[in-house]
Length: 398
Image (cartoon, rainbow, N blue to C red; front, side):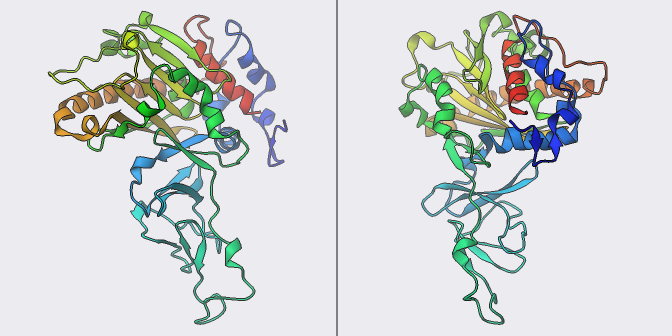
């Protein structure tokens, strides 16, 4: 592969080749990703192309734009995008730029009704991205021109897919289909829930979301999520009923995901009510839960009675927004008064756990300012999923 980005920046001008090569060695001899991968702005430009434009990445959830005409802007490391639901209730993603003078069309979430109008010269697009109005393009009060073909000047659509409410995009359009990309994880989780079960998940409107801000590189959140090694010291409450010894590693092949599972999932929620469970979840695996990071930027949690997605919005190389979306089995569990107390407790639990992690990953960012740090050593037994992620980055960045 050409190691230069747009013929200009070479990854090996930023990072010594040996520093990346050592990441792919067997875990007992490997080092982690070097400091430049976390605190170098020039490296992040290459990462945006290799890991965020060339791969399937999460940019939001479909339930956040539920009605036809709902639209919201999103910036993917500086790339302006529009998430939109059209008249057919399909999710569409477009580059958020007018084809006329390059103005950013949408600045805030809204319902655009039938038309996306550029504020600059009022060029307008329908919900399919087609250019439908060009005021005065041929002179005063002449809104058409025989020398201009509107059909070739619509909004540029981004390759997208909706999976379990997640909106994923592949900007470069060079990755395999998302169905193929996600198949290894789907195959793994088919033993827990069926396709019919998946259709039952409903987003909680009152207690199904929270956002955290982390003053660190996005990768720290992923690599921390991959392992349970830190549980006794960082999450003593969680570790009191789901101990480090109750967990097992998950390493996807091909290398697109990694994480860990627990064999003793047993939520300590107060009250007589219990959340309804997925109908086809095996009776002999009621205490299994799995926590998987799908590279690059989403963390998933699957349980017999709820599901969550924890997706990352990298802002720059030292700042990340974290978005938690929580789903339950059926509309009643997700939104009725009957289960509100349980939802409140579950929301509090996961927000507490993730907040504890933010303190840790911010500390790792600070540590990466040390020139003495070589990327770190791995535990040959406890750090396998984290090493799996580091190898994914080191392999795909070149």
